[in-house]
Image 1 (spheres, helix red, strand yellow):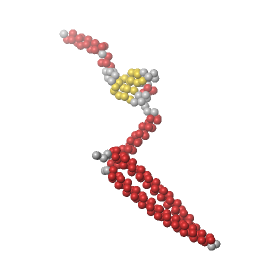
Image 2 (spheres, rainbow, N blue to C red):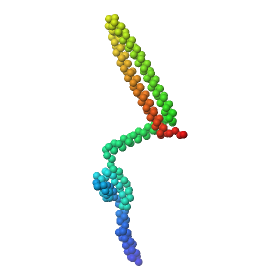
Image 3 (cartoon, rainbow, N blue to C red):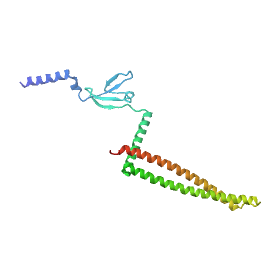
Image 4 (tube, helix red, strand yellow):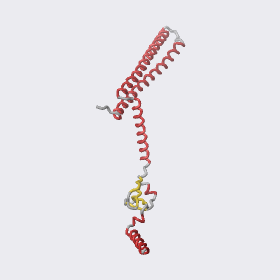
Length: 204
């Protein structure tokens, strides 16, 4: 009785194995990729030249276990790196805005305060520049008067004019730098305001 049962079970297992190949192939994985002719190929191995184009790892039933994307070109790698860097920059920017300000009005107030500070600095520089210019004119008029009278211009006067002219150039450059900084601040705060409205829109 036991012998007949054993034979029956063995016969059933053989029938299943021969009629359903997925049973004995269970657990095995394959590569599915596109060859040079544009046709899809399923194989238990894949050449490197096909692997760089991307492929699927599938099971014996054709189910996708993992999809490996195509390797990026050098240009695509650069573009992807730039996109990631830009994303990190924006995330950092957003975090800084949210940590510094609660409302758009906060940014506008800070902008006004900073611009007023720069404007006051420019005003002071211009006053100093005006005084320097007036002093140069004074020395130049004095030198011209001496020359008209046939007198030699003193070394002290010439030295003072030369020094003041250098100072004038310095203050002119400093005013130009401050004016540029003021413009940059205006643009920067305007961008902050626009960005803040996006990440923290006002509730109606």
